[in-house]
Structure formats: structure tokens, C-alpha cells
Image 1 (tube, chains in turn orange, cyan):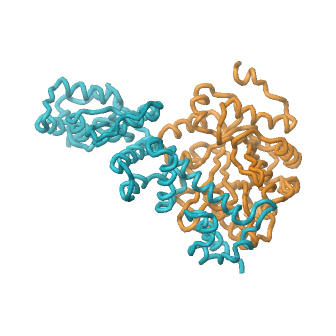
Image 2: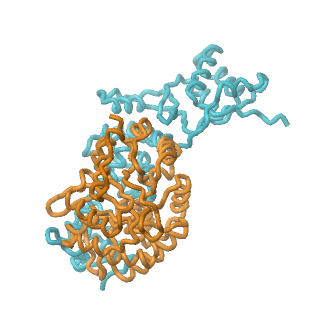
Image 3: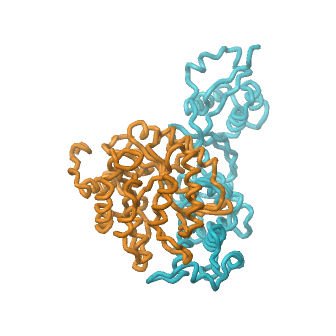
Length: 286
Length: 279
């Protein structure tokens, strides 16, 4: 079991459920520990996506991960969205529900991006109240991820990590620590990623994200389009020493390779946590 | 003085949504009303390698790229017909007119057919409108609720005397279409990577439906369209049949009717036979 304050389970090493892998998963039932589900892709469909999700949730542990809660937006919370999210969590028996510390739009518009917050006292107070309200609706602690960011607001008076940590403590929510996002944002803002990792309250970390990115020279984009780089693995090991290791998820969203390649990348995390290598021969029957 | 959280968000969104350049976006009236252009470098800190315009520009670039990718996935035929440049121009104009107001990108393209029909200066506007409408229909049927399918046992259980007034309930993922252009054939050609088929106007009829979670369509003759359209709209079987037998220029025999009905049932177009309450 994990060591987070809610005793939420260490689900092992999973990947995100993606359309290109549906047929493979249904046909082969690969020996993967768990799947992360993109909530919005399944909230309004009665077609194949929901059929596949039901099959997956029947066989594997799942966690819901969203991109449109917009918990930092100054628009009212979308209660219709939250109601559907809760219903999906119940349907799939999701272990937890996560989204991002961000806003995605205002004035009724959705930009469909994880937009950065100004890290001010006003933002913090506001977001604490919103997170508490969401957790109450979901009847479980919301888990919030640190997004990759490409700009900083001049009026921020908090660092991102202190803002996130204080928010998690004050709103009593969990943290999905995206180690790649820590690396990306710290590069983009000229900050020290190890310091970020060391300041995250370990007992709040419920889950890790790992992913590849695209280095543009002047900045890094969080594209989930490649293998995890060594520096990110190093940060992951550093954080695991503090948390004891929690559920770990490999994201791959662009140029998605075969299921086996994505799963193999996720399983590298076992080695970085000092766990034995899995038996691939047995795992894939080859 | 720094803007509050609400105004900061309104300002950033106004800049991201502005269709012009980064500098035009920051200097636009809507953005300047919330943050004077002179305050911009203080609001968005430059990094070691990027100035404030570059940094907000990353979000602006990703916005259009993301929405274009989503619409291309929902409208592959339209994107194929227009080519990258014209499709990109269409998307830029569309999302400026109809920015997303849903938590899901799946609803982003809901008004694209309407936009195509109303936008002046679009070449082959009638064809593109019908193609877009058809692709939107496909998206909706893809996500429609799954229905049970009418079984031979259920058909066999209907008393012969009840068929006259029976209604056939269609599955949820089904639509009967009267079309003016061969948009189905066009989409199939795009999907298979074949050369473009003709896009000349040609009245035809089809039923689009989902079977085993895959979208399909069947071309229909005009009388078959009239019968199926009546049935899916709740007209009792006897009345629907008599309409087809009475009206229209094409003669329809009983063998033909039976063949249609058997084919439609086999394809799983109906979920139930609804009988009048004997009371």
C-alpha cells in the first residue's frame, strides 16, 4: 500500500488508455497494472469508447484524469460536468479522480489548454475554496497535477511548488506529481527542478506522471511524444525516495507507438524504483 | 496596479483567441481594456531566452493547432477536400466566430456545417455544407447510445393481425438521409486513400447506422428511403407500406418489400416492435 495520508493504493505501473490501443487490449488482455482514463473522452458517449472502457474497468484498476475541470477559473464550477464526472468515477470504480492546477477558460469559453495561474494570495484563497467544493461533490479528495507552463506572471508572489503544496494542505487534496512537467516548467522558467521535487509534501503525493517532451532550444514543450529522458528519471528516483513510491503512469499522446513499446517504457520505472525487472516473455507470451 | 485574477484570465484568453499576430493580440482593444499594452512586459515575465510576446505566443500557437487537429479528426473529408491551407483558414474563421463552449472537444465542430453555409465566398459551398453535415451526423451516431437489436424471436412473437398497426422502433444510432451529393462515397474514398470520386450533384438516399460499434451506411432506392423514413419516424407499418405502394413513380412489389425488410432487420436497424395496447 502507498504511504500517502489517505492510504490510497500504490497501483503499480500503468499507462493512459488510448484509442489506438483499444483492439490490442481487448484481444490480448496485456498484463499491465492499471490504466488512466481521460475523463472527458467517455462522459458523453454511448458508443465504442464506453464499451471499451467498461471492458477495461472490469479487468483492470482505473483512475480518472481530466483536462477540463478548470478548477482555477473565475467562472462558476460546471456542475453538470462534475455530476457526469462523479457518475463516470462510480461506473468505473475509479480509485481517484485527478485534474490540473490550472484554468481552461473564462466567460463560458473553453480554450482547451492548461493555462497557468498567477501564484498570488488571491488565487490561492480562491482555488482552495474551489478544490474543497469539488472534493465534496466527488465525495473523495481531488488529486491535482502540476501542469507544464510556458510563462510566469509578474504579479506572482508564490513559487509554483509552494503554491501547490499550500493548496494541497489547505484544501486537503492529493498531488499528482508530473515529474516531466516539473522538468519542463523549471527549464522554461530557469528554476531548479530538484528543489521543486524536494519541496513537495511527500504524504500528499498519490500518483506520478512520466512522459517525453520536445526540446525547442529556447523552451521545452510538454508533448508526450517520446521516451522519458534521463534527467526526468533522475527526478523520479529522487522523489520516490521521499514518497516511498506511489502509482506511476507513463503518458504517450503523440506519435503513439505500439502498446508493448509504451508499456515497456512504463515498466522502466520499476527499475528506477529499485524493483525487479518484469518478465516480458511471460508478460506478452512471446 | 496588477489586474485581479478574473481580469488576468479574461485578458489572457482575449490574447489567445485573437486571430492576428502576437503583437496585434496584445494591442487589441479587448486586451488593452483589461491590461494596458505598456503593462504587458511586467505582467508576463520574459525568460532567459524568450521575451513576453514569445511566451504568450506559445499558448496562442498551441490553441489553434489543438482545435485544428480536433476538427480534422471529426471532419476528415472536409480537410481532404480543402487541403491544409484552406482548411486551416476555415478553422481560424470558425473558432473565431464559434469558440468552444463545451468541456469536450467532441462538440467543437457542432456548428461547422452552419458556418460553412453562412460564410460568403466558399467555393463548392453546397457540396461542402452537405459533406460537413454528413460528417457531423457520423460523429453523433458514433457517440449515440447503444441499443438492443430486434431478434427473430421477437419478430416471431408478433401476432400476424398486429403487424398492420405495429411500429418499428429504430436503434438510437441510425439516421435516414436524402442527399444531394455523393458524400458517403467521397468519405469512403478518402478513408481508403483512393482518388477523389466525382462530387457532382446527384440526388440519392441512404441510411447511416452503427453496428457492432462501427459506422456503416446503405444506399437506398427512393421508395426504400420513403418506407424506412416513415418507419423510423413512428408511422405504423401498414400505413407506411400503403404510402409506398400508393405514391411514387417506381412500382414496388411484395417480394421487394420483404427483401428490404429482411435486410434492414439483418443489419440491426430496429430494436423493437411496438404494438398497440389492446386495452
